[in-house]
Amino acid sequence: MAKFRFEDLEIWSFSIKIADKLFDIADVLESKKLFRFADQLRSAAMSIYNNIAEGSGSDSNRDFSNNKF
Image 1 (cartoon, helix red, strand yellow):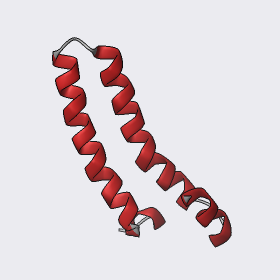
Image 2 (cartoon, one colour; image 1 turned 120 degrees about the vertical axis):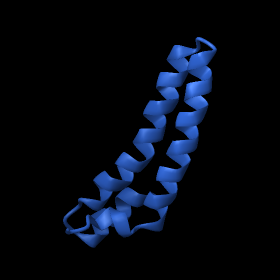
Image 3 (spheres, helix red, strand yellow; image 1 turned 45 degrees about the vertical axis):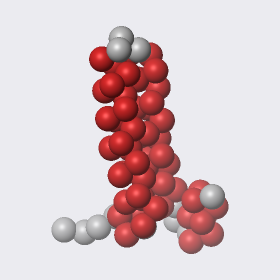
């Protein structure tokens, strides 16, 4: 199966690990009835790796590196 460009990036793999930890924290917040904070945290966690993936979809290497930073 073909890999996407971002799947080879170490930072993308690291962002998935961070997101897992943030989702665990969001679960704790939700158990304390802090639903809005939990939702915001989950959304921010997903935004990290989604932005990396989106940036890797650029046509040129220059555009790709501009989106990474």
